[in-house]
Structure formats: structure tokens, C-alpha cells
Amino acid sequence: MTSAINQNSAFALVGKNNSWLGPFEIIKTNNRGETWEDFIKIDSATIINMQFLDDKTGFVTIKSYNKTYHILSSNDSGQTWTSIFSNDYSPDFQFISSKIGFVELKDEIIKTSDAGLTWDPIFTNDDKLIASFHFLDESTGGILLNSKDFNNGFLSLTTDGGNFWKSIELDNDADKIKISNPEEILISSGSSRLLSSNDGGESWTDLWDGSIGCLVGDMEIIRPGVYFVACTTDVFKVLNTYDHGLNWTQTIDSSYTINNKNPGLWDIEYNSGTVWVSGPLGISAFNEEGALNENPILGIKEKTNLNPYPNPAETQIYIPELTHGQTVRIYSLTGQFLGKSKSNPIILDNYPSGTYLLISTNGQTRKRFIKK
Image 1 (cartoon, rainbow, N blue to C red):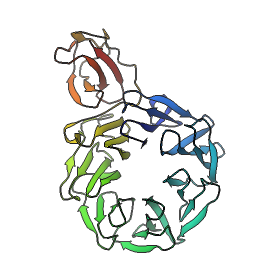
Image 2 (image 1 turned 90 degrees about the vertical axis):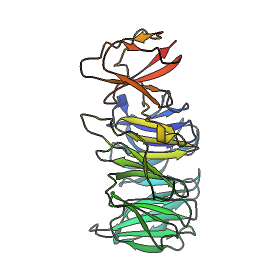
Image 3 (image 1 turned 135 degrees about the vertical axis):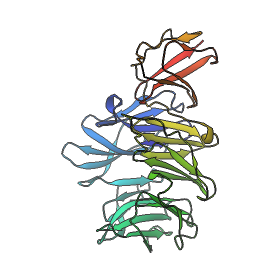
Image 4 (image 1 turned 45 degrees about the vertical axis):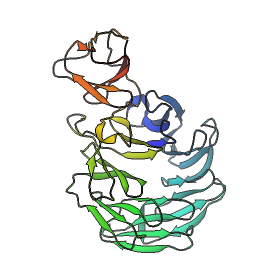
């Protein structure tokens, strides 16, 4: 999971010791993934969710050992944390400023306007389950709900901060929602369907029916009509459209595997021209403008299982860990795929002087080297 604050800086929620299993910690980059540093470790609890508004202001959900969930806030770059909400149910949350935030509690949305000192309900529905929600600002937001038998989905929309909600019945179960403006809404339904509305939910266009081969892991509206979708479940790719979903282009190569399986992606986020995606193989960051020609796969943390030598090198490097049948890929630090090799030595004659990233075929082993 990533939380981007500009085109170069992002926070990542990862398992300790570079595992995607908990307990979790938060790491941070200020140079678009070239290097990462430890940011937050909470040894007495598990971090399960996070959001950062800027370098100083952040929010996390933790699960303590007594199985109580807490939302914590910090306004000093994580030096100190204050509990602003506690519950026995894992709460999903979204903050749109340091003071204004929303929390989902199964069948209820509550809101704070004073940084968590007080919370007030703005939406309650006892006969349906909340699937997800998204607020564009303090006034405009949407909530996806499912009937308790998951046969029907529903969308509730507000443009006045929750005083009035417009309810819309969908023809399938509901999953995720993103709002670009009060008129443009993007939702995933049944994971394999993606629907858009450009009239505030009055009518819907089915952008694909599952035949495109992507189960929606997460999605972003970059700007009106421009959507990026991270695919999950046995597919490692990002799809994008620049024409409201009429045409789709695959952004990321789908050949990366773990144990001969594509692991999929979990999360996508956009900020200031940079698209960030995360999944079991790590975090990828790429420029929106150059996305069609890049195959980025930036590492979360450098791993030392690869030991190229000499390092720095002038004409070639050797990797003792290479065995028959294995392959390493070479990337620039901006995520551009440059080449691959199955044997020693790796010739560097065509590489300009600079720093490069070696990544094993399963994506789990990474090491930088320098070409003089």
C-alpha cells in the first residue's frame, strides 16, 4: 500500500524484513523509489492502514494485541501519535484535511471536523453493508453498499456533506468507488466490471464486462476521462484510458512472476504526474506521460542476495548467485527496463555511467550497481 504526497515522495506499508506478511512498518522515499528509509515501526501493534496528506500530517490504523483497533494521527512527521478513534471493528478511513475526516463502521459513516475530538454520524443503513466510500471534499462523497446476500449493490451520493443522500440501485454487487467531480463517478462491480457515470449516477456505461482480463484491485481517476486501473488476482498489469474507457492500453508488463504465478496488484495512487502501484513484487512508480513505454518495477528496499562485482564497474560485472536457468533484469532508477542476462559476465559497454538496479526474475532480490 502506498500513500503519495507529490511526484517524488511516498510512504509504503510493508511487512518487516521485506516480507509482505505482518507485522507491518511504514517506509518512505523522497526520490521516487531510488532509496527507502524506515519511517514508523510500532512493535506493540500491527499497522493495517495509512494515509499521509503531506510530510508532517499522517493517519494510521493499528490493531493492538488486545484486538482493539485505533486510528492514530500525527502532525510532526510521525514523532508522536495521538489516538483519535477506537473500535472493535477494523475501520476504514479517509481524511481530506488535517481536521476533516470520515470513518466507515460496517453500516455507518461518521465524520469529524475537529481532528478527531468529536465524531458525528452522517450516514446509517441497517439493512445493507458498506463496501467502500470516497469523498472528493467535505460536501461531495459517495458510498457503495451491498445487500446482505450480496445479490444487489447500491450507491448513495451526497453533495451537501451528508444532509441529503441520493440512493441508486445497481444491477450487480458493488466493490470500489472513485469520484472525480459531482458528475463523474467510477465504480467496480463484482471486481470484473467497471462502470462510469458522467451525470451524477443517473446513467451508467459498462466500460468492460470481464473479457478484458482484469479483476479490479484498485483504480484512480487522474482527471476527467483518464482512468488507471491496477489489476489483481493472477495478473500483474495496469490498464489506462484517456477517452472515458472507449480504448484501454496496458501500462505494465505482465511477465513478472512469483513461483510461476502473476501475483497481481493491490493498490494504485496518483500524485503530481507520478503513478504509484504496489503488490507482492514491490512498488512501481512511473510518469503518466511515459507510462506506455515503460516497464517499471522499483524495489521497496534494497536486498543484498545479489552481490555483483566489481561494484563500481567499468566494462562488466559478475553475479556469483546466478545459476543455470535464472535471469536477472537491469533497470534504470526511473524504472525503465534496459536488459536481462542469464549468465556471467554481464557486459556494460552500452550502458552510460550511472547507477542501475538488478532484479531477479521473481522480483524478490534486488541490488544496485554503479557503472563508472
